Amino acid sequence: MNEKIVLAYSGGLDTSVACKWLQETYGYEVHCLTVDLGNLPDLESARDRGNEAGAAEVEVIDAKENFLNYFVFPALQANALYQGEYPLATALGRPLIAKLLVDKARAIGATAVAHGCTGKGNDQVRLDIAITTLAPDLKVIGTARENEMSRDAALAYAAKHQISVRQTTEAPYSTDENLWGRSVECGELEDPWAEPPADVWEWTRNIEDTPAKPTTIEISFEKGIPVAIDGDYLDPVTLVKQLSNLGAKHGLGRIDMVEDRVVGIKSREVYEAPAAVILIEAHKQLEQLTLSKAQHRMKSRVADECADLIYGGHWFSAHHRDLAAYVRSSQQNVTGQVRLQLHHGNLRTLGKQADSSLYSKELATYGENDLFDQKAAQGFIKLHGLAVQVQAHRQLLIDKRDPLHLAAPPISDKDETGDGTSG
Ligand code: ARG
Image (cartoon, rainbow, N blue to C red):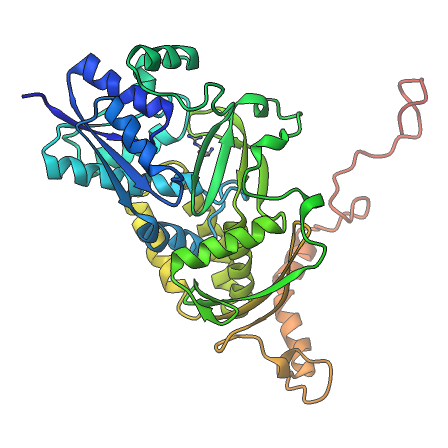
C-alpha cells in the first residue's frame, strides 16, 4: 500500500500539478485539503481539478470562523502590523492551515504533508515551522521548492496529464486571499518605482469611483473584539465581510510597501485589507480611552513584537503564548464604540466612548466645573525636572556654544573649497 500524504490544496494550477507530481515522484496516495478562510470562489472546480490530478480525495474545510476567532481577532487586539503597515492576512492563515494539515494527517495515518510554496517566500517558512512544531515525525515536502518548475513547465506538465487549465494567461501575479485581506506580489510589481497596474486591485475601488457622499458607521467592541456595526450584533464572519465590502467601496485598505521577507529578500508587496485597516484603527482609538499611558506604551512594543513573530512563522512558540496572554489581559476594559467616517479612501474617527473610559471631562476641561488643581502642578514640575537640572549643572551639560545639543561643527568664516558652495 502506498504511503499517504496530505497536500495543502488551493485548486489552482500549481497545487494541481503538485498533486500529480507527488504521485509520480514519490508514489504517494495524495489527500488534498482545501482550507476555506474566506478565499474560495470556486470550490467545485477545485474538486474537479483535484480529481483530474489523481487525488485520492479532496476535502474542503470551512475554517472561516475559527480563523477570525483564534488568529485574526487576537492579532487585532494586539494591533499587529508588520513593519507598521501589513495587517498579516496571509501570515495569520498559515498556522491554522498547518494545524488542519496535521489533524488530517493524523486522522488518515499519513506520514507526510506537502505544500506548494516556493523556496523564496515566507509561506514555506510559516508552514514548515508550524507543521514540524506540531508534529515532528511528519515529513514536509515543499513541491515547488523541490521541482522548481517554471510557469511554462507547470502548464506543460498539466497538459501532459490532462489537468485542465482555466486561463492560460492565468494571473500575472502571485496572490493569496482570505477574510482579513488580499496579498499580491510578482509580475510588474517587482519594480518598486512602477505604479501598481490597475489590475492588481480586485477588492477596492479607485478613488475616482468611490461614492461622493461619505458613510458614517459605529463599531462596537467587547474586550477588544468587534461585535456590532451600527448597533447590530453580527457573527464574526458577517461583520468582517461587511466592513471589507464597505471599506472597499470607499477605496480604503490599499497598502503598497517594500517589506523585509524572512529569507532576507526585500520584496514589493501590495495588499488590499479594508476590514483590517478599519478595525485596527477603530480598536486603537478605543484603546486611547481605555488604556493607561504605561499600558499604551507597552502595548505598542508588544504589537511590533507580535507582528514580527507572526510574520516569521513563530505562532506556536512560547514567546507568542506569553505575549498573547499579555495582550488578552490588556483588553479587559477595551469595550465601547467608535464612530468612523469613510470617504474617498480616507478613514476619520469622529467619536469614541467607553463605559470604563479613563478620560475625565472634569479633569481635562478649561471650562466650568474644573476639578484639576492647577496649583499642584508647580510642585510636580519641580520634582519632574529635578534630575535633569542637577545633571545639567553638575556636568555642565549646557554648552554655551551648543545649547541645543546639535553638535554642529564650529562655523567657519572661510570658504575652504573656494568655489562658493560651502556654508
Ligand atoms: N508578503 C506577504 C506575506 O509574507 C504575502 C505573501 C503572499 N503569498 C502568496 N503566496 N502570494 O505574508
